[in-house]
Length: 97
Image (cartoon, rainbow, N blue to C red; front, side, top):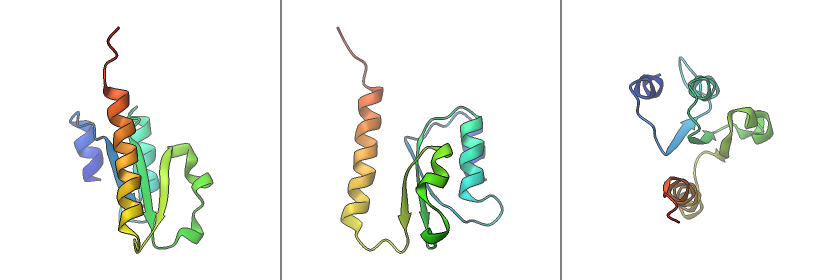
């Protein structure tokens, strides 16, 4: 819920990393609220129970990935984040003609 409050202040993160299941507002509800506010930020969902969630089921919230916890390969995790942030930086770079 703190993420929603930050976004309501005008904060626009390049990437959101969220657990799917959390107390209070879960990651899916958070993503829904973020999308309602018109923020198109990339989302990576994490879950220790990925069998309950298929990325295709979460697609309406435009997540980039569903990563299983515990994260065993930090190299792959780091590359996923770097790829998303690189793509985001490219989108934000103005094109000069």
